[in-house]
Length: 84
Image (cartoon, rainbow, N blue to C red; front, top):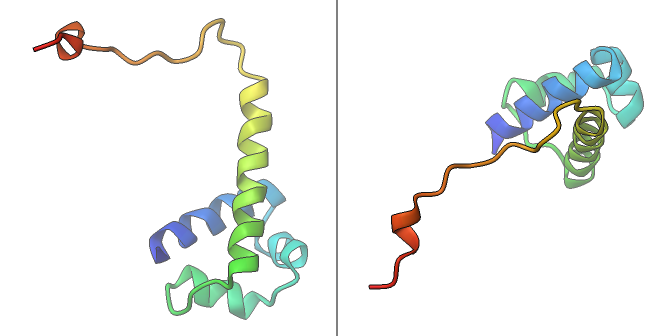
């Protein structure tokens, strides 16, 4: 969980324009963010949800601008669906 929180915070800082902007946006201190990044403390749920929402909204916005004609497809092994 702590690794996920570090990755989410790093991505959220990229989305918001840096660590100071992220702290301001979340209404938290730089010290708290440093503790979370260093895995010395767990983010409160409200912050975790806010960071997750921020990252997901950015990813969804980027996906809507994707210029590929077809979504990614996975290869399915036709033998795995046969009835035994």
